[in-house]
Image (cartoon, rainbow, N blue to C red; front, side, top):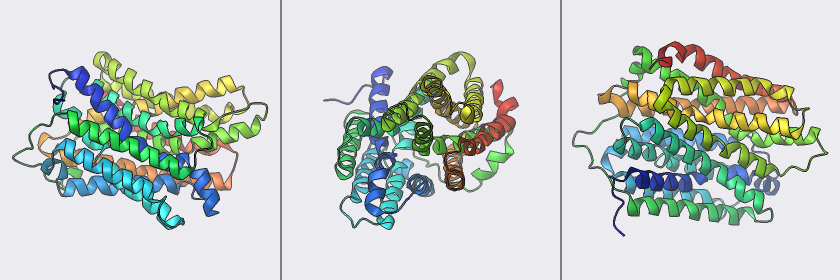
Length: 394
């Protein structure tokens, strides 16, 4: 089969979105089977399962930038190599002695190789899309959301599937996505003058007001997003504890809460064409912050009311991400764009480790108290305060 013609953007984007979805299923696959792994280990790993992936991703993105990997390797080839290595890292824990070190090492390496999947997918989109990049980014981040929710769907419909088999099938699916993109999607020629990493790019984040506003809006969003995803099992289990009258399939409700984020990314991308990325991002950031503040007050309500709040939160907590990414790309200096985007992404993911560990600590001190999640609303407050005026009318 010949490569997809880049003049047919709908087919091109559809294939790219599916490949991104399939390969990012690796991200939360360990979380989906955390209960089984912890039961065999006899040790609670808590938020470290997610933090290990985040740390690997941070280091991976920085290494890719320092060595200018995206400028040296064709995007489809880098995507495939990363998908293969990420799949091997993900499933490796099934063949190694089961102890916390190997489990967390497997998650760390998975995150390291995801750095060649998620950002490279966005790079491919930015190579082929111009004015409607906000829409394309919406679909791409939406694919990431689908990929992260998919392991919970499989878990919800396959209660008896052993965790080793589960990780094997997820890894195989990721491989399929990598080979699909490599086989059928075109590459743009590598640049003759490579955009090398420069620490000087860090000063640009604080020097230019519009870029600083977009960056801090993104940082506030990241403070909330991954902690929300990581502790969805805890939130739903606390609710189920207070409502024994309901029979709740925890993996399925987690899947639903994450997967609706695709709608936030998709609708946000479409709305950005009319209202601008700034307005869309700020509205979703504000709405997710409100949902966070309301959480403890609805724990005693009916399943319907609680589910509606969680779904709205799931939609808006990630729906602002592609629009903040679009703004960062738009405001970054062209000659330093690669370094600036990489640095902002890395800082954002470093922030997620802090918020995840903070929630983990607070839940250990105050179990079954959903008010501990109020600290996540600080992300919305800081993001709105730091970015509101500058990006609202972009």
